[in-house]
Image (cartoon, rainbow, N blue to C red):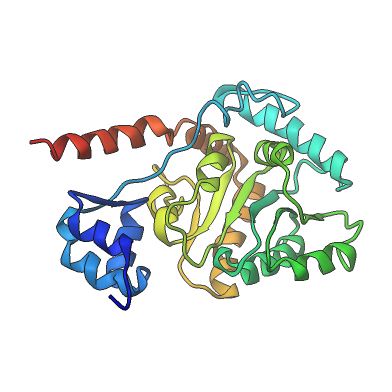
Length: 285
């Protein structure tokens, strides 16, 4: 044949096809996320399943994390996170101010991750009285390197770490009040789940697994666990980011309860594994 796709063959002849979240399954069927394989997935959609990924609760456990300066559980999270935040502020040369919300973003710096929105969020956070720390690298990190060495060098309220560091990522999850994930598309996403495990409220664009794991606190005050926006423009991001910053500053009691609530959410592989086991067992009947 002129063209051969082993992936298409797998879709056609397998007993089941999986992707990593229910919303990404829908997007791959309806919005072109699957590219030229969309027609094959549509034809076989009855055996196509979206099952969420999970996080490793051994690696990502603030109660037993060897990297962070203070370990904590949901009951001790508010005080411990304040200590972790002060540690990071001092270590990165930021102003040591417990009342400034700290927004962190840990990501690959590539267009998929919404780098235009990350760039905007840095300035917007500073403008709104918060602090911003970025940790990441990628083929589109040039602008961020220039900002780190230019207008944001030695800035009191922003630090751009254009690099990869496993240890630093643990520090930032523990220290952050909010965690930004403005992806253009995101099949599942893990950083928003890790952030919640560490008591940081995610700010996400409603796409893929982000839509499946983050519920807007203003749309559902009881079950909400973060802040969600829909557009791919700066104004859409602002409406979620501003709400998060205002929530931290002006509703501290409610915020503290949300920190405890999101830490109790079970996004571990225990749940994901059961979903896969259930699917595999269904194929045997």
